[in-house]
Image (cartoon, rainbow, N blue to C red; front, side, top):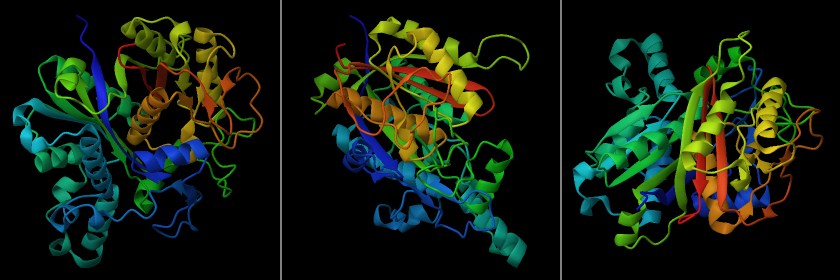
Length: 407
């Protein structure tokens, strides 16, 4: 019998909704979480918009002894983990501790916590730097804190491949299950919207400098001008399907059926983009043909050259306009390591509810972007198989196939 690895719980902490129901209803309604940065005064900076998880207060969800030790990226991961476990109906205290694993992705570290401590260092001296600075900034802090909080002593790890990380973490989770783990908390969150975090993103030249939330992030549009940064992400519970059914899982959202990752070739090499090989590899790993895919959740960078390249890859594999394509991240911004994880959550919900969420604000598709972009309103469809693609800064490419359970 084929072994299948399925998602039984989802926890979303997104700019347009905290929790699955709020995130999904906002996404289907086209409600955006993008707005002017409020965590600090953005006026001196060339980028003033972001996707913030507004109204999120960590002390409403977590004990003070944890919040004081950790950065916002970890607060979001811990809350998303609690949501995912509750959604899956799993009480960690009742599970074998060495059979529970944690595999997350992060790309920015705890920079808000770090900035606060560095300011204290330079303003007041070394005695004013907290001891938790040594751990709160680290990329693996969220994995460690989730593991400690829930007594998960199985395999633990973190992936740092920027936007692609949310998919790469799922692959590591699947590997942990193959090697004997009973369940895995996996996905990713990022929170890079401190002044320091924003400044480190500016040199790429890819952030949108528009001050209009409705026109700032326009992937595949003729007026695309970069992307809007965001924070948040999603954590998922993954299990082997037979084990999930045996324990009486309340629901199975879908299967992580295929995965592949590549690196981009050297500039000027003349070789095809790495994304093409990643998509083909994921389809092959899932054992499906392009015609089996019902929807693609695009990386959708919002940078004209990158959009044209991605659209070309999708047209080459599926044919021009050959499969519906969507980018609900137009309502959240790009969440880096949390972005692809949230796209997988949206893909699973699309499969579960048989509806494709929309791409918002795009009004005039760019020449050469020959894709069937789902615009403005959801599209009812028999969604059984979804492809999620992601590209991380530095040349990382990943693709995941999500399939209805038993598909």
